[in-house]
Length: 410
Image (tube, rainbow, N blue to C red; front, side, top):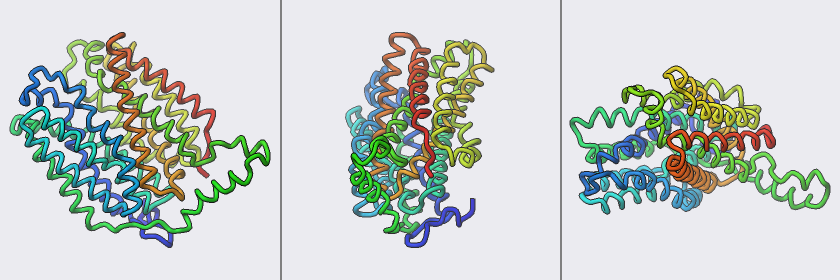
């Protein structure tokens, strides 16, 4: 991918390859505390008065819930005041919330810091909105795929780094150290331009709405097309379903691994947890070119592979079969995320990027919260294998919907 492939068309201020890579690196470093420290809540909370870590499960999703609530507002403000300013705001907001979390000396103070992390953060939607204001089409979908890779890399590396530092720095106080990362990211982002979207690209949505209004009742074909290419309703449906189906297996996966593979050590269990994300890092760039022209079909296949991978978790009783099911899940996750990036890039044409990506972030976070709640309910009634069965059913339903509504972004 050359700098030219990421340059903005004439009429707007674009980003070259190095600048897009810099944005991805900034998101990666800013994600460390947000992704690496929550798994250690059961070690942090006893020092704050919750001796049994009773509140760990609830506090785990507090930032997610408040990110979902705040994302649409921040997106609208980004469209009004500039994507770069609001991206800097998100990075600085993370830094402030991490400082407060690291300095908290009570459970209420720590909880407030996590609430502020959700309200003031939202770096993923802010980053995507920034990119969408500078890139479009294939350039944008490739950049969004890269951002997902950055997120997956942080998800794999951050818990390992936090664990490695734990003998020297308590995980609770690591929030103070991690606060330097989004602060550094903000300083680096300050050197990037404030992109502007060419006026010509803003006409697409208005033309589509005008054509829909002018042809309403004109003929059967016109009224049947309720979800044209770029429809946000369908995109958000797939986003919610995909996040729900993939995340529902996370909370109780280690328990399921230990149940199916007695005696397995923590390192192997952690590698099995990380395997789908490693598949994404290896395969996402290669798959982008294969599915770019047929994202609807690719998305249906992705959901089907997610269903197959999840279904394989329940009967897996050997390390090899468990690893294979995780790899299949990873391939489905990769296909789904890449195809969603392509569809998102097409939907972004002519739309205000802050509002769109803020709403998408809310939908995604709602999917994650729903997955966590469904996993807890399923585990309570059917054990650690029950969440993957629920995820299988959701993925199969979404695969059928994607197959029925598949379309090309062209």
